[in-house]
View (cartoon, one colour):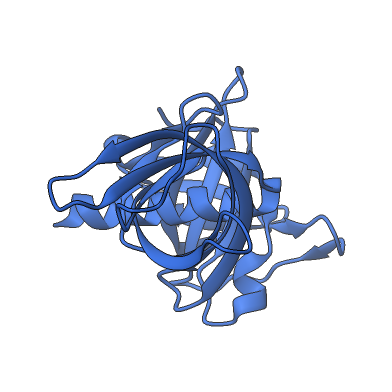
Length: 217
């Protein structure tokens, strides 16, 4: 599924500047050709300033369908077009590279990320995740931790991005399942209970980047 003319495209620039990579811009799609999505100059809604893009800039972008489902893809600036206003040409993504993310069915990817876990003042440790997603994560830990289902947990997840930036994402969750592994360790499956939309979007962005890496292999 591709976006349509006049739809709004939301995007972040892949940048080595950590603050720049966090800024979300929006733009109207002016045209779609066989090779490009043509957009107006992106706008930073918080500052009201236009964002100047350069050929080769890499972008993480998404658009919404009528049902409010987000469709993510990566692209890059391929050129410019002079019209009544200057327009930006983005490389048209392949159909199968567009990832659909629904709030009830978040994308999950395999990933070993460092996570600091706190169950209580007595039980705190660092572990590695098995997978992560916009709705929750799973991680492995020592098998002697006496925990039941629905246990509350506070975590800080270390998330690296393709542009070299690293984010510390805090959240609170609850254990929804515990699985005993053959190694004697425990696999804890956690559902997010408290996480800001901003932090959740960072995780979704990481999952999208990770999925794109898997597809290139």
